[in-house]
Every structure is written in structure tokens, then in C-alpha cells.
Image (cartoon, rainbow, N blue to C red):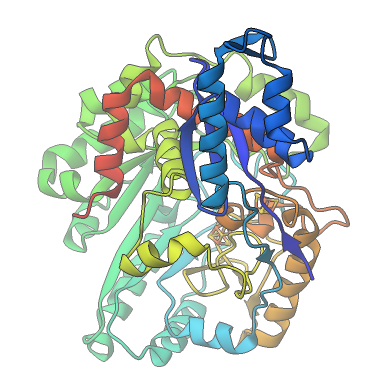
Length: 507
Ligand code: SF4
Ligand code: SF4
């Protein structure tokens, strides 16, 4: 059986405070520096009474451990505390995580009836030539042409999904590219199809990722249908310098002119439905990006980073020097963190660690009661954090592939369109996923964050003989990460309280 065993981890921060993380209790405690020493000695079978005695001076008032002097009564009090914590399972190994969970064809069929989002690669064509595009020379990816999504395929896929729907829950229809507005006719056809009388009883939400170049031209339609548009813009002219036109000139002025037009003509729509997506690299920084969007549009952008997956070996060094070397740092990162709050990746990470490991965040009342006993022993988990096919979304490409989502390599097809049919074979999909899970669990069973994993199996080179995961976490890395996060918390405790309030308080 493939299982994952978690032991108690101790760590200290740059201020010298010492903590222990108990996986069995799923809690982090501030503790005296002697506690980890006693824990290590105890794990090696040392008699702790004898251990303290042997480190105590002949006058019996001072105990010296690892060259640090403690009053002997303080050291003895810590031994009593250590025993108390041990009695209450703070040093007990967590139940092994059983990673034998499997995906079934039945589950895939069930997912199809509840899918939340359908994403169309509206067209492969784009009016920009971004230097970091995943279809540029820097990435190993299938050639991309100018194919457009076939409306008949789209209509049949939507009809299939909608025929399986048993509730009137909202379906999100998303337009992706290339630049989706280059195939505006398709967008209009899909919106009209969904709004037709046959589907009056259902609810749809429309979203789009756009580079903004054709935004003003179609703004009337977008505003009428409350299309949520996420505009890719990396900040000011310098920050945006990798996003160039086909003739290699800057796209910044044109894009901003479009955005400003929409803002002036449809202010309400702009406020409610337009957002920004920014890629971070060495021409911008969190601080510069934050100030730019705040001042110009009174918005906080979503932040993403340049994909480092599937890099073409031949251009690896150039990739690094072009986008990652000499990154700009902000003069006051903590000011940016405060201003962006949960939109700041570092702040999100703090909230994430607190949610998963502090032991003080509960999803519901049942979780409050059950959390102590850990309760994972009898459950089978599927390794990784991969979303199950069709459970959340599906990405349909212009060349007829059906993929789990828009972020992963095109080799992981889970279906396709042929001339007259949609080919989805749940048994084959389940076999493919289970095969990948079988491969990756050899890594995951030794990973300390397996029960809170955030990685997708498709990002782990699982199609090769030797899957790799950049987030694999051993004991050293785990304590390093906790130490860094708690160091940040200690630097600004009032801000930490604000994070907790914003991230976890019931609305
Ligand atoms: S990257 Fe993986 S987990 Fe994320 S949406 Fe895509 S398939 Fe799901
Ligand atoms: S972080 Fe990587 S190695 Fe760890 S459990 Fe997740 S997928 Fe497996």
C-alpha cells in the first residue's frame, strides 16, 4: 500500500522563536527551545531525566545544553511540559495517508452533468506576438495556426452538457485564444445559442481573456451581456514591453487607448466586469504593477508568473536571461503586501499556511469536532491536487481536442471531436488518470505536504518515465517554509491579524 507518514517538525524563525508543528494534532505551537532538543533525544531513546542531569552543573542551578545556559528549574519545567505535550499526542506521527484512491468511469459521467465551466479556444489566431507566449520559441508546444472554433462542434458539446444538467446551476462559458475577439462571430453565436428559448430555464455567465486590442470595437456587445473580461496587461509601458505587436513594436498605447475608451463609455460595466491579469518578470515588480493599476484604473490585478514548464532546452539560458535575471525589487515590500492584501502572492501563502497547518481554521462544525483525531486513516486519497476530469472545467481547442483545462500540455487529451461525433470514453480517461496517479504516488508518499498538496499531476512530467514535482517537500524544506512564513508573521503581527480577518472570517 502506498502511504505517506508525517512526523512532528520543529523550526525556528529569524527572531529566534521556536515552534513545533504536530501533524497528528495539525497544530503549530510556540515552544521553549529546549522542547525540540528533548524531542530529538527522546526519539533516539535517551532517558530524559539522565540527559538533564548530565547537562546540569555540580551546583545544580544551571543546565547547559548546546552551549546555552538555562536555570535548572526552567529546564526541568520544560521536561514536564514536553511530557504533557507528548501525553496529548503532539509528538505522535499522523495517521498514514492512504494514496490508493482511484478515479472511476462512473464519477466521470457524474461530473459531466455538473460541470461548472466550458472554455472555448475561440481562435488560435492572435494579434500580438508576446515574447513569453507559450507558443513562442521558448516552449515545446504544438505549432499553432489560425484555426477557428467550429460552431457546430460547440453547439453539439453544449447541447450534450446541457442535456445532462439536472439543476439550474450557473454554467460559465469562457472565451479563450489566441485573441478571442478575433473570432467575434463565434462569440456572438454562442451567446445567442445559450440565450435561446430552449435554455431559458438555465443560467449562464460569460467570461473572456483578452489582450484588449479589439476591446473598444466590441464593447457594446460585451457590456450588454455583462461579459467578464480579464485583460492581460503587465503594467506601464516598460512593464508591458514583452507584449508586442506582430511587427515587434509596443502594444501598450493601443491597448490602453482601448481600455480608456471602454472606461469612459461604459463606466459601470468597466467597474464591475473588467479585471486585469499581470504576468511578473524582470521588467515589472509587484510594487510598480500595484501602483500603476491603482492609480490609473482603481483596480488590483491578478498576478501570475511566467510558465517554466515545457521550456525548450535549446533556449533555456536565453529564457532565463530574458525574463528572470535582474528582477526589480520593491523598496518596501511590506507596504505593497499591506496594500494588495490577499491579492499579493506572499500574503496568500501566509493565509494558506495558517489555514492548513495552524489548527485554528475550520471549514465547518464537523471539522471542529473531528480534527483532533486526525481521522484520515480509513480514507483513500487520490494523490496530488488534480481536479477530476469535467468536475470543474473543460477546455475545447480549435483543432478539435478536449483537454482538462487551458493550462496543461496538449498531449493530455481526454476526448476529441471528429466530423460527426464527440468522442469521450470515460473508461479510457479513468485509466489514463489512474496510470498517472500510480506513477506520481511513488513521489507523493514521501512528500510532507501530500495531504495539502496544491500541484496538478499534469505539471509533474508524468508522461515521462521519471515524474518530477518542483513542490516535493521533505522535512528540511517543510521546516524552512514554515520558518519563513512564521518569520513574516512575527515581523508585523497586526497585519497578520488583518489577514486572518479577511481570509477566514465568515461573511
Ligand atoms: S492545472 Fe490541473 S488541477 Fe488545475 S485546472 Fe488544470 S487540470 Fe485542473
Ligand atoms: S507537492 Fe508534488 S510530490 Fe508533493 S504531494 Fe503534491 S504532487 Fe506529490
